[in-house]
Length: 240
Image (cartoon, rainbow, N blue to C red):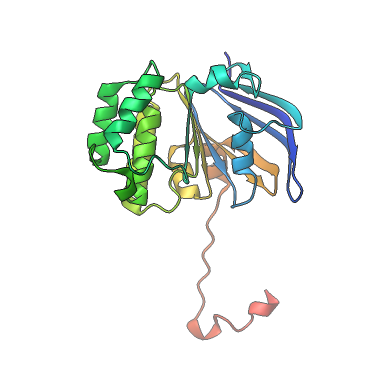
């Protein structure tokens, strides 16, 4: 079976940052949580995946095609959403929907309308008047209604209130009822990733530090609680 994502030995060097020996893969029908602190290399890895950057070394395949050589052909199959993505501010959401429908032949208007209702969006509201949460839900709706085979999300819940985060994560779980679609979900919030991911990859300072199934991580994660008297709480901290 062709993998949705395959990266082997991928490296990219900048003046003050290096992405080193990234190995990553994603099967059709799975959600991959991609976790790391800000500046760890998540966005650089994603930019290589979507063809916005070329790797210095290594193999990059998306939906069976090499990147960036096949980016024009593959972009119709890839939905990309970023936390800082912006729409045309003075246009309405309905204008954006018509625009997307004119470009993507698999645009699903009934699904788009259902997402508009589910997210509580106003079709005739100008984008410049949308809140951050509404803007993210609008961007996600426009990406999902294209029916992409691979959805790549770069920190989509960053800066959202708990209600908006819940709505977006819940919709992603609904999308995965289609076992041919795949999602790469990048975040520094492990709560969202733990909730929806099949597998989780951890990256730090440009290197992959762990990559396994979610349940494997959950079996190893432990919470330790220490109870002490209030008067002794800080007494010997320096000696711990």
